[in-house]
Image (cartoon, rainbow, N blue to C red; front, side, top):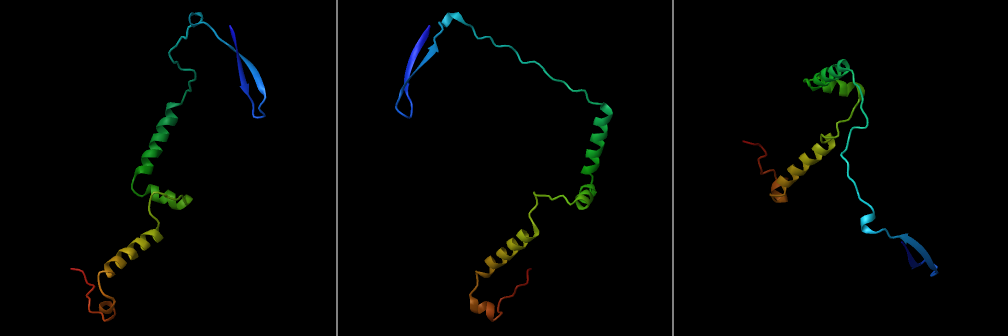
Length: 113
């Protein structure tokens, strides 16, 4: 039942290992259904209180106030410096349409309709 297996190491030495070779019909793999191993009891009053606080946070103005108090950062919004940079880039793109002499002589009207 034991099968010898010869292999070379990094130092180029021959080593010998033995593996157990079991016949196919000697074992059977059995699958069982998963079941709950852990459970936790939660007080329903605590759950309702948590839900109430979550609802309050979703109201208009509450989240901003808490954000000011605890100085949380909202990473999903673009920062002010990035917004300013985007605005200046868009204005520069508009300026590239015109010749430099026209801009210097102020022949272009910057007013919007």
